Length: 417
Ligand SMILES: Cc1ncc(COP(=O)(O)O)c(C=O)c1O
Figure 1 (spheres, helix red, strand yellow):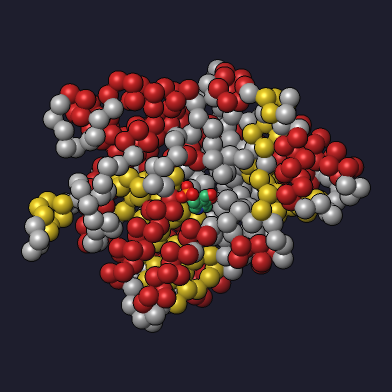
Figure 2: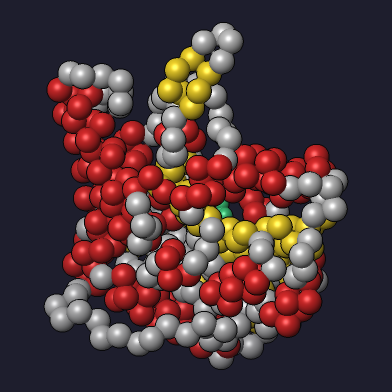
């Protein structure tokens, strides 16, 4: 279990003012003010991110790297500035360690298809956990099928925490890769990644951390964490969809073959032989998501301006408040640990399907999510098909959680539960 050190919210930090920076939070749904609790699926965007996108398209839209006219230079400069910002955001040693991808899913597939194809052999073992999103399971399954390797799974306790003693037993010289998430999208569990990484390194395994749910809640330092790969998506941290980052240790990235072939990733191309650029461009074939990278930069600036420790603290408080409020209800089953969790609650109301909870809540302007959350193996382990999930971000408030709890009580009355 990982605890976050409490911090004092910056003086003058005003959640109402922050909410006004997110235009969508002003809208109504079904005649009521929107309560947006589907943040773990995707976050809303502040005006500064929207403005960065509009500014790019209205003032300097051009293709990057190739052009030498003013617009192309401005677009290239802005995109490469985003790489610098991402380097700083996760504290990578160098900007060359930041590869732009479509998002977390593509980052994991990139590593599986390049590092994985090059390094995994018959008889090798890859370890994932029972808490993983499908995007951190399926790419490894495709790889092990191709190579004749084996997938091992770190079990999860009844409380929804990884059983680290069991993990240690799975590790052996056969382990070549460990791939786990930093924070679970289904339960909110924050995993002890530093310990997981240290143990994996003792047997010489490489570690990929799926940061899809952590970059928005926690301060990320890849050097301190000592992970070999770290992946995240822009859209879950106030940035646009369609872009994300793969971080890799330099010697690993340099040793990896290209992911896709095409423009921008070659040094020279001929029918007899093509040579490739160094990372990160080796892995960025074709026209990248230029506006996405620029929007992501604006999102990272936004997070830094608010203060990431403040965000972590507020999100944890909301998660704890939500968990406490729901724990006080009768006829509810809560999933995941009671402490050491990201800002989300996963639950089931007795006798009410998760989809019915989400549908009725939507009628009251509350956006939730219900389903398996792309975590079917975890749902099987929990003995359920689905859960309902309310996920909170920095712009949410305890008043909104109170309104959500009221809605849940009404749903219980309506279904006679
Ligand atoms: C923990 C986790 N990993 C991976 C993903 C996939 O992210 P994306 O769809 O942005 O590639 C998600 C998305 O919900 C997630 O929550």
